[in-house]
Length: 167
Image (cartoon, rainbow, N blue to C red):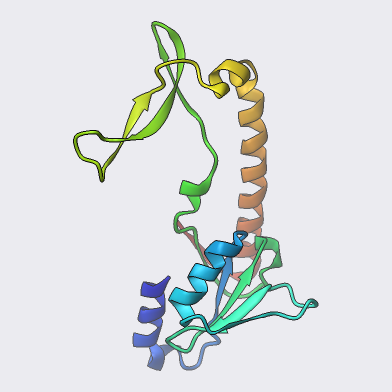
């Protein structure tokens, strides 16, 4: 987001006739705090109870920034929807069928290169493979429905407000 704000600053003469603002959807209080420090230097204020944004501030480059807990709270307008790191945050479980049955694919630290991560197969049954593998498809279906609902909301906003989704 910092990079995007720097680009906006470089395009100030082009954007001077536009009403540019940044609207972030962040449910984590800790992450929104970190974002506020990085983007505004910590110069934010809580929004009044009657506003849909829970926090607002001005970026270091002079762009108004608003934080929301749900994408449906973001006011309609001509927009770009950026999903930076959004897909990384979706809960998933990955499985691989082996001669021992289903194993969960996990992320571990590479013992040869400690600052690198690698995928490994669980050496034994994990709680997910032990308790949920039979209901995995229904669980997966439920998560997929929730994610589909969120994407339908994004696409509806894009359609209504003439915006563009960027992943």
